[in-house]
Length: 312
Image 1: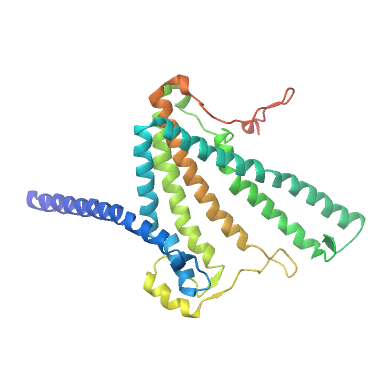
Image 2 (image 1 turned 90 degrees about the horizontal axis):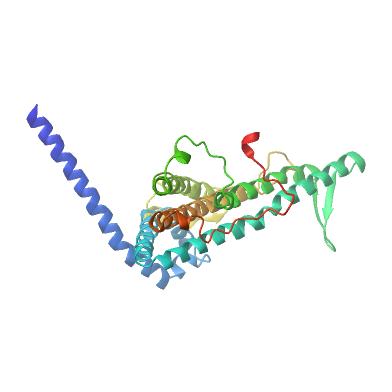
């Protein structure tokens, strides 16, 4: 029994050592991969070449791309821990990007309401089967197309305003112990949450969403399990096949946009996880007086009341 346990322990140590070596090798290779990518952009950005498209598809969900991002995060974090003002600059930049994108696409909610009102008027009052918009050569679609297109506005709000809502502190939270602990303990919980939950979740959804998106844009369909050489061989038969099939014959036919938004959402979540980790670390290091430092939160005008989602 002791010999079996010794062998199992030795095997586990060997596997752990191999894993560490593999990670270190990929971190070292990421410098070369990044340098090669930016010095040879035509290999993956010249989409007149079918092989370049397949390289872009492959590397977007590859181990190589992950370690380029991971190594960049390590370098920026190391510099930020050395120079806290640089880390605060990263926080302000990432949170500012989330706020700007969110505040812009939040107007999609208003467009959704206006379009729904127009649809009701056109159907019930003017009894029109379609809606035409524009001058000269107008854009004309069936009423059902405009009705289904409302989903796109909702998707814009959900995917592109998600990190903006997080920055503003607008998400509903179930608080069991958080409010009762000290400031520094809260920041530790936030750092652990960003590293253990937000980042891995964003990466996992990205890996699925990336190839899910491309399977609705090109044929032959790429797969995450295929090697680069396999995808390059398939590129000989590559052609664009953008999804334009709706749920009804005259319904909305731009459902590929939802796949694109899913990928964009994952990228924004990952970047906000980085910003949240940096902010939590800096507030933990600088103390309670640095809480919400440089945080650009929306300000309610006099007479406006904050909306509490929990009351629902």
